[in-house]
Image (cartoon, rainbow, N blue to C red; front, side, top):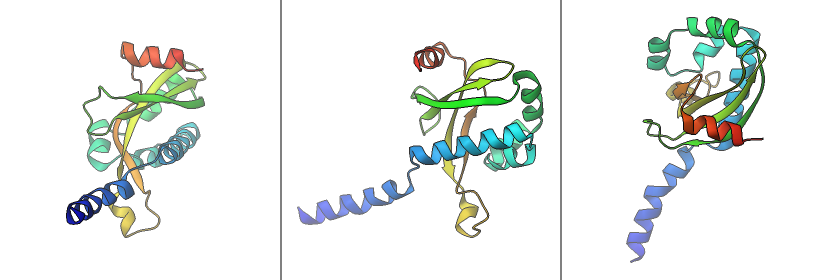
Length: 145
């Protein structure tokens, strides 16, 4: 019995250590907002894992700044458990200077490069939706105060 308990603990402990905290999400969102508002497309692109960066390209950032305006505020409002990502996406209510209130959602993945270089970000966007407009997400954002 004791061996089984020890085995379970050994299997669970690494998962607890590797999991991202809400603070990690808040910190990453704050960094995204700063870089986005500064128009620093290179820094914003560095927040995405390489395959996502290649898929999305970095041009969308400049287009979105023109269309949506600056980010005035952001607030965590819940989880998108219906996403196809293996991590539930965290949903943030974003207020833009031109587009008003919108929803942005993302998940985080550990950045393998951070283990060898302290200059690297510890986490990168794993899944990302700049404007998440599903009816369920819209309700979540409207209910958030």
